[in-house]
Length: 283
Image 1 (cartoon, rainbow, N blue to C red):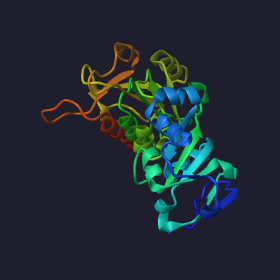
Image 2: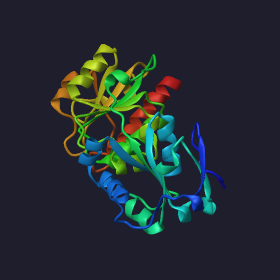
Image 3: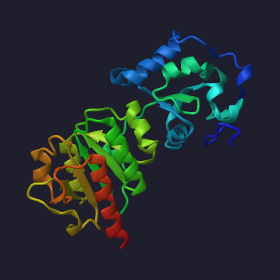
Image 4: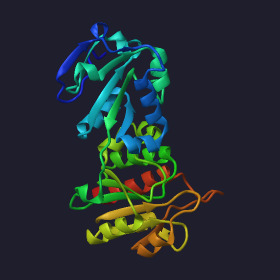
């Protein structure tokens, strides 16, 4: 049982029943704005805002240094019917109380504890990455499905990878399905987008070994040294990696496929390869 909505550096507390910002109509302009941000990547880019749902995800977001623009609360969905909560130094006019029907209209997923925030996005580049002395990086080329990227981020968090780099992306990093599937790992693992050429130059300038996951002209992943600075590079399930990455690679690696199919989901492959690197480094 939790009595308050707790975030780092909380400043203000509010009683939901005493608040003036009550929204009961799904036609409210603020509700329409949230819905548009959920649905349109072009609106997220134009406004510099995105939407995040759930206590845990919002906490991770704040801890990563993001700024909350506004918060929407559905009292009926709060755990144990709590009426008082804390926010991350938000003025009272930036906190809105909504009905379950309005919350359902705004929310990308239903079971998010009645908490939804509009957050200011941050543009991060390769130069913002702070790598360890022996970095472990995941690189995804032309990732198309936000759910796959979210799952890769969860594995990267579990393996304590230094970063996930998305090259030539076909989805934006603030897609609501990506945030949902990552369960907040988009905020716990440094994640940047860039071109393949920029990424290759960055990796080589830092002396990081480039290992491309591919079936052709490759050796088994567990026979490959991942104990030094390593970038594990994967492409789409349908077409794999482009020749740009194949030529840039220091080694080509593969996961043995013993069944009749010849591919794994990219997030499963990422988890296997990441934890082989962890095994080698901890061994």
